Image (cartoon, rainbow, N blue to C red; front, side, top):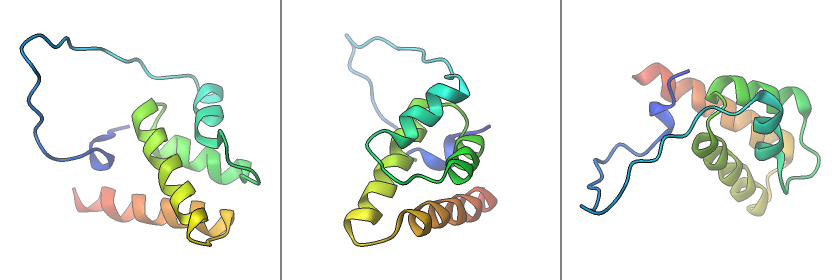
Length: 96
């Protein structure tokens, strides 16, 4: 899974004293737990689709969770928020 469509496109400069940190993919159970953390009523099948679409990468899953939380805050239902996220991810991925 290529997570680039879900990450910021701007080039970021790293400070001279900064160190590169390599992060490995998580296991699916860890990904599901991260994605659904703090969200009640998460549809397991939709969560699994999101994890499969984004891969088991923590930053991509955190961004997805934040997007869902924002939609819930604005009054969306859980099912619509997660379905909309999947719909957007398919559109954005096809643009690249």
